[in-house]
Amino acid sequence: MRVSPAVAAAVRDGRPVVALESSVFAQGLPRPENREAARRMLAAVRTRGAEPALTAIAAGTPVVGLEDDDLERFLARDGVRKVSARDLAPAAAAGVDGATTVAASLVLAHAARIDVLATGGIGGVHRVAPATAHAALPVRDESADLVELARTPMIVVCAGAKSILDLPATMERLESLGIAVVGYRVGELPGFLTSGTGISLSWRMESAAEVAAAWRVERSLGRTEAMIVVQPPPASSALPRALVDAAVDRALEAATGANVAGAALTPWLLGRLEQETGGASLAANVALLESNAALAAEIAVELATDVEIVRARA
Image 1 (spheres, helix red, strand yellow):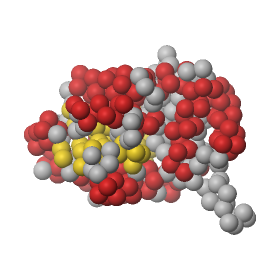
Image 2: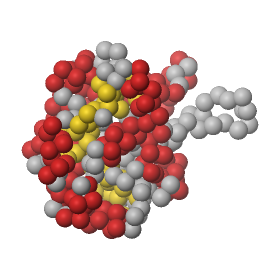
Image 3: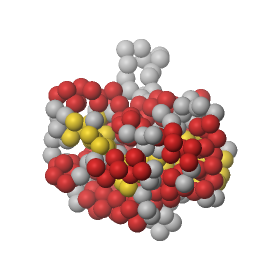
Image 4: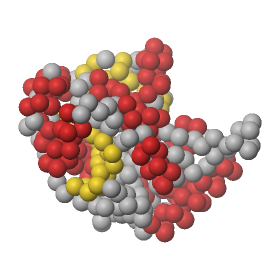
């Protein structure tokens, strides 16, 4: 694994670092909005005193701190594969460019001794059950993000799970897996593109310092699960819940008709959602990515003041 000099120095010196996934730029967002989102996320982290660390597989090399020509290839979205945790080794062996999902980013960031990851929305339980040989026992498609969150001790800042998912079922799985979901200044699960979902959260925290304090206890207990910190998209860009729900229903119906499934389903649905909302979902996505990167940096700065956590990295 290659860690960029800036990221390696920050980790070594105990300075704050925020990991960022690359799939959102290579598959989740179209051009040129992906470039704008990357610019805003990187700036949000840096202006708050932390070092951003984009994760990826670059020409077969696992990278933490994607930059320069490598980053340009990913923003061009040309021939970049979507890579989950299970794909890391095959992608590296094949020498390909691979944009990392949340699951894969957790693996690489944790290996680089980074404590905080920022993303848009995590994966979860899909609303559509794919056809199976046993029609009476349909299998729900479930993101690998959930399993990786259950075994990787990191703080993940997001706007909830993606709107295209079954959010109540996703919250049940997170609970079953022992993954804490903390609302940042909210007591209700955000809906990725919307401010709320009607799903209550058990825990609400008002500051990055509170989140850091909870994480210290989590680590002192030896728990290996991630902690998810959720906040709604900025009020100026959040979409009405009814608008998003109707758009998702139409997108899911279209996906069924087009026989889209597997790893291609999420980026396809997000693209369709953009069409259904007249581009409003895209603007909201970029805004919440920047907002989540900023909050993640604030939490990372708080953690960097904790001597025990810094020592644990060393």
